[in-house]
Image (cartoon, rainbow, N blue to C red; front, side, top):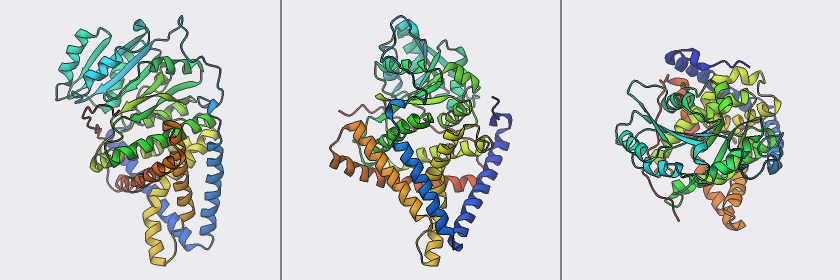
Length: 444
C-alpha cells in the first residue's frame, strides 16, 4: 500500500501547509464551540458525544490483557528458543550525552542475549561536548559497539541519525533507546519472542521514571507513565493500536523498510512512525515487564518545553495523514480508536479556552462540561489502574497518588491549547530539541 509521505515537499512548504491546516482546524473547532453554545440542541449534541465516548472507553477498559499483542494473538514462549535467536540491532542517537553515554554503552554491551546475535550502533549527532570522543574510546573496549558521526551539515534530528544507521545494520529487529535509558539485562529475552506473531510490526516497552521521588514534577511523570501503561495495554489488547514512545521501542526491520525509514520532517519520530506502521496494517504491542528506565525532567520549565514538543508532534501526525485517516485506511477498529483519543487528548484542550470565555459571557456552564468530566474520570481511572498494576500499592494510597497525578496532568490542557494555537498562527521551521540528561542514578 502506498502512503502519501510529507517528505515529498520542502520544509518551508510543509511548515506553511501544516500552519494552514492547523488554522482551519482551530477556526472550525472554535466556531463549533460558538454554535453549540448558541443552538438549543447544542447540549444534546455534547451529551450524545459523551455517551458514545463513554461506551467506547468501556469497551477499552474491559479488554482482556491476554490479547495485548494483537487481536490474532498466538501462543508465544516466555523466552527465545536457544537454537533460534533472531539478530537484534540496538540504535542510539546521541547528542551531547557525555554524562550518560558510558553507562548506557556498558549496559547494552552486556545484555543477557547471545553476543553474536546482537549489535550496538550509536550515532554521535554533531555533539559539541565530549560525546564523540568518549564513544570512540568505548569502541576500543567494546567490539560490539559501532560508532557513526554526523557533522554540522546533517539534518533530520533524531530521525536523520537513525536513518543514517538502520540501512547498515544486520538485525531483523531494531531497538531504539535514548541515551539516558536504563536497560534490564533480560530485556531482549522478553521482547524478541513477541515478534513471533507475524503481524506485530513493533513492541513498545513500558517506561519507568527512575528519579520519580525527586520532586512534584517527577512524581507526576511517574503517574503519567502509569496512565500510559494502562491504556497502552488495553488499546493493544482491543484493537492492536499501541503507540511508540521513542525510548524502548522495538521495530521489525521489514516494517521500518516498508515505511521508508523514520520521517525526518517531524519533531516526534515515534508518534509519526506509529501512524505509518498502522497505515501499513502492522500492529504495535506493549510489554510491561521489565520496564526501561529513563530520567524524568525535574523542573516546570523543562517539562513545559518537552510537553510542547510532544503536543506539537502528536498533533502534526493528524495534520500530515488526515486524508488517509478519514479514508479509513486503518480499518474501522483503529480509525474509531484514533478518533476517540483525538477528541480526548487534542480536541478538548483546543476548545477549552473559547468554551470557558463564552460561558462567562453568557453566565452559564461550559457546553463541553459533560465530555470534560468524562475525560478527567477516564484519566483518573486509568492512572489508578496503572499505578495499581505497576506498584501494587494499597487501594487508598493508589487513589491518593492518582489524585495527585490528575492534578499534575492538568498541565496538558494549557500545553495543548498553546501549542495548537501557535501552530495555527505562526509558521515554524522544524527544530529538534533534545531533553537535557543530567545522568542521575536510579532511586532505591
